[in-house]
Length: 232
Image (tube, rainbow, N blue to C red; front, side, top):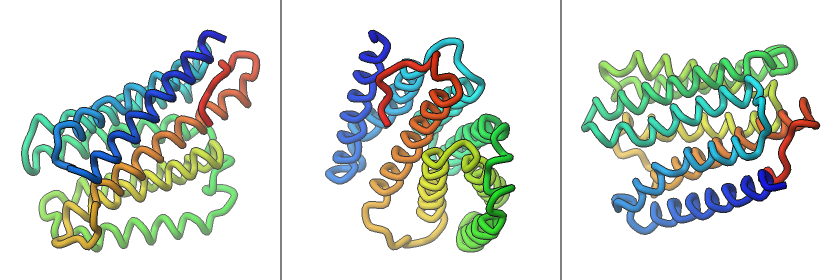
């Protein structure tokens, strides 16, 4: 019961932080408050996942926590650098996050669209090709990391479909968020007002949905060891 209350409290804190961050994105995206709230989002979400699951935690939960840690590093570490270096640091840590999610979701691949709806693979393939084609002219020497990241992102989304619908929707939101980042970085005069807001809205939604889906899957697999009070 105490763990359930703690999980709900952490979820409430995350909700306040996320709302404050998104509102700040709309008011003044360059304000220090925007960075500060972004730095806190993933640690609080990780706390929700820890408090929302019981020990000993599954491989899925542990790897999701690691992916959230890499995501937090992707949110914070680029602020220590400038220009292309900052972007490469961001891509590097989120690449690690995507690899970790792939490792987390891989055991569920038999239930994924890789085996159940193979036509969906064509949709992801077209999306990857289109994104790379649009971004390549502006990416220059960074085109190789962009291609690698796009492939890993699509792989993560494909495998996420095997874990559950909520995780799959979260993975698609991640694809949208990271695609917006790439378009904003490499396409001159990218025509999306308040692009930072939309990037963060889809990013926050992605991580929340993946976390909720992982907790739901954990409850389904281990009902006797699941904590109460998860937010889903």
